[in-house]
Image (cartoon, rainbow, N blue to C red; front, side, top):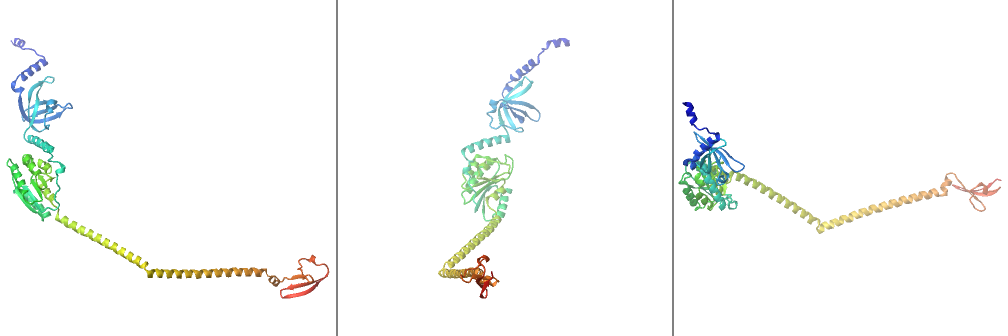
Amino acid sequence: MQQSLFSLAPTLTVAQLVRQIKDVVESDDILRDLWVRGEISNFTQSAAGHLYFTLKDRDATIKCVMWRADAARVFRLPNSGDAIQVHGRVSLYEARGDVQLYVDEIKLTGAGALWQEFERLKTRLEAEGLFAPEHKRALPEFPRVIGVVTSREGAVWRDIRTVLTRRYPLAELLLAPTLVQGDAAPPMIVGAIQAINEFEIDVLIVARGGGSIEDLWAFNDERVARALYESRVPVISAVGHETDFTIADFVADVRAPTPSAAAELVAPDTRELRGAIRSARQQLTQIVTARLDDLHARLAQAAYALKRNSPQARLANDRQRVDDLSRRLDARVRQLVALRREMLGGAARHLAALNPDATLARGYAIVREKQTGRVVKSKSQIAGRAEIRVRVSDGEFDATTKP
């Protein structure tokens, strides 16, 4: 019996079986056109631009494919963990026998949808020039009246007052209270901004505390963005925490990471101002003192130059010069006289050395022929007996030579 039953069942190849299942799936009207919601995981994008991901909930998963042509129309690609809705059709990938969802449209849900709306508005307002740097205004250095748009309740208004009372008690604070969360918040915030601009404020702080994207969503409202852009005075946006960004932050002239930081940015610290004034006073004193010292030195130099160039000073200088020249002339004359005396003395000594009397005084004698008076210089000049005259140092006498 069992053998006969077995023979009645068809025998299919794997390919035939998979194709049969695919035909059944693709012939189902619901599976050919449906929306599916879930959480995305294992998100990847191929080099060709196709998207591959898994859609899951608590009980099941299904693989999804989105071809490049459809992916190009997605405003913001999702990330793993995003809650999304996808539209498409169910089919079977024959090579692996996997049931897959072929997606042609993706919608973010929950926070993801809000971020998508945030990006759309941000792109549009940026294209209109609401974020342009040339529209940003500088904050006043010493504001007299500071406007604040925030909730009267909660810590934000208290923190701003505390910081400004400590740092800059010179300024007057003016609050325009408003809701900062919920559907009714955006028009109230717009009204508060417009109303406070009617007063003589110098700068405006728009603030609220931290929270989720839903809590902060009022500050991503286009009406609020345009009211901030049209504010008569510079605006500081202080919405949420440092990691939170809203459209208001991009439109405002200055973004502060927290409301307390906005209070520090909006005005200087009076203690720092006092220190700066003391430092400036010291620098000014030093500059004036140095200037006076320089003027005194110049005046003394001018007085000295005037005194040195006066007629009395010139006469005294001329007298000094005459005295100097007289002393120099006298010294020169004495030097020349001494030199001449020395020269005369030397000449006298030389003449004395050449004087015959000096030679005779040393024991020498001068012998002359008596008759001729000729000086006898050699024995050969006298032959035989001759009359001679001999001169010695103390006189002369006659003598006769022997043959």
